[in-house]
Length: 368
Image (cartoon, rainbow, N blue to C red; front, side):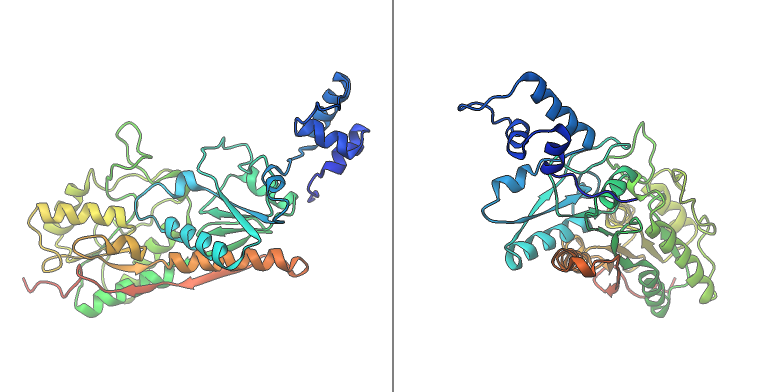
């Protein structure tokens, strides 16, 4: 059962003091002719903690502006890699709200949190945007206090909204494009396939990051790859016949990008690789060049990514655009709509079609 947000009035009533007294104590503004006994002060603070009251610290400083606070969660895990799709989404949210909605302010959380404690800040927020995921305690807190929230590219609770890219259609586009170019030996490098020196790797072991464990993109892209290869009468490359577990930590299929290229391209004769993300794609591209495998003349590479990240690669990477800027815009519009039309608030799912962007890393397969 949802509970309403605890107000200053609720604290004052439970502590049997006036609202002004509770405010002065909780905001540490005693003095200037006003004082309370230690017993009253301790009672107010105890009641505040027991009720879970969050003082509206930021809103207090903005009270004259009457602004709503929108809090973005998940920065610590989603904004780490250069060119990450969430960076573009966040940039779009901030620029859009700053330019078009002057009654709103945004805060961004880059902190690491305990997995069993709510990630919401100590001040009161009007709405939240979650990047990929947050812990269950945070979802419970949001839903019990009836704070509207939207998750970008991740799962939501029963009262939350989602903005998602269509990974199934994206993989279909990638396989179709390569098949039409004439490729028959098409491999897929998922997040567990290539050893990349990522921040989540510990003790030399490489696995996908915690926020991707069980993520729909891992399953949807791999499973759709298998299905589409079968639909075109093509055999998946060796080592890719079985979809990986979406519950346990993923195992590497190969010790490193070097071994991956040596086995998949030099040994198994793959002429094209579809890659889960741009960091893995960069690693594979560098290794291919080091082994004198010219891209795209001998090997085509295409990845799922954000347009900005692919723009800075050399050669320019062909990619499936995850529509990160559009996800940011859709999330901002959804949150504003729910804040401004409270009576019409309901969970929504916005799924954006991915698109194929052809650049310089894909071509027809070699003749030999």
